[in-house]
Amino acid sequence: MSKNWHIPRRRFLRGLGTAIALPMLEAMAPSVSALAAAAGDAATRGKPGGPTRMAFVYLPNGHDMANWTPKGTGENYELAQILEPLRAHQKDLMVITGLAQKHAEANGDGAGDHARASATFLTGCQARKTAGADIKVGISVDQIAANRIGHETRLPSLELTCDQGRRSGECDSGYACVYQFNIAWRSENQPLNPEPDPKQAFDRLFAGANRKETKEARAKRELYDKSVLDAVLEDARGLQANLGTTDRRKLDEYLTAIRDIENRVAQSANYLVKVPMGDQHIPKDYSFEQHIRLMYDLQVLAFQSDITRISTFLVAHDGSNRTYPTVGVPEEHHELSHHGGKEEKKAKLAKINRFHTTQFAYFLERLKAVKEGEGTLLDNCMIVYGSGISDGDAHNHDNLPVLLAGRGGGTIQTGRHLKLDGRVPMNNLYLSMLERMRAPIEHFGDSTGLLKGLA
Image: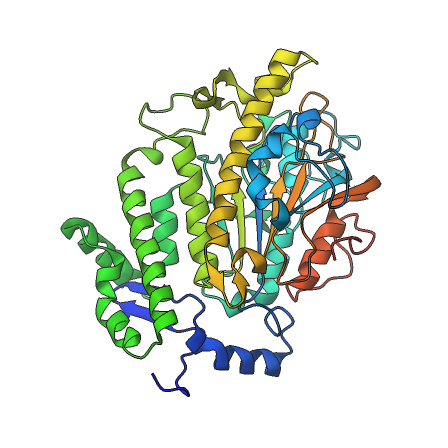
């Protein structure tokens, strides 16, 4: 390979109905550096090998806060039982306690905390109490970033879930179902419905520019049991001939990961889409853990290939009555969250919470396995993991269970428990994240300024 040879950052491997974006390669370094210098790109310039990404992972029904909250503060803190599965990643995350979303509270609107919890989590706004079509809340933080930098990637943002959504009707005390089944909002009355089907999400990531051609190519692949990689094989071989040893290895690892996920998606396609609402009548061959991990893997691929830099993942909707027999909890999640102080119920709720942090640990492990420059993909991420309710029995929206994983391209000091005084607006955290995404705004929801203590 010539020392002066380099490829553009937006290079794709192309074939009939397929466009596979490339991961960050050393051969891209000259073009990336030039672009950063010209644009004054703080998210790329001087950072360990890639742009900054942001993701939001939402869990329903609150947590057993006694078994969530760490002991100690700063770097000298001990993970509680629920967070213990994250021990291997403790230096890569920050536990934040003391954040609140005051507009998730009733504020005169009566019952409906589950609807408000999810509707407000990323918007910071009070949801209009209606079961009709006149829904209103606010644009979400992910979409503020997407509006500013989404044009730089093929997909402005990616929205995923493990629940079949409801787009009409009433779900919680006079609130439309749409509030509970969406956390991303393009505008104050336009939710972005998340995709529950891994196959549809995979196809979206690697679809070509021509929709008709993509549909025909997909049908042909399914008929002849072909991979998306088969369509771009010739282009990939031509590219590899010009790459150095490190880049060839990185590209091989990336393409192998795509094929692995594509195979797992195909194997699960026959039953994942049958799950109604993620609550009852779940097929015997359905694996919630497998579903979650596929969705996490798709986000890793999307970030690794720079298809998008922004994602939201509604793991389960607030108010979910999913059961968790694989961890010894046959009772319904929402019912257990109303524990009434009973230790037996709280212990089972903690098992559910721990199950979810175990899956999140898998996500972090996969992000850390991808090398970017001098660091990892996780180093260039900011991932909020949490819930819009703290204690499910009290339905309170202060002292929320929140984790922030990743170093934001070197701008966040992780490995700490950041304990905040009082009810600090969670929207202060979002302001700080938007600034790191090159999408700064002066005010968001009830924000009072940038969140202090991240760096």
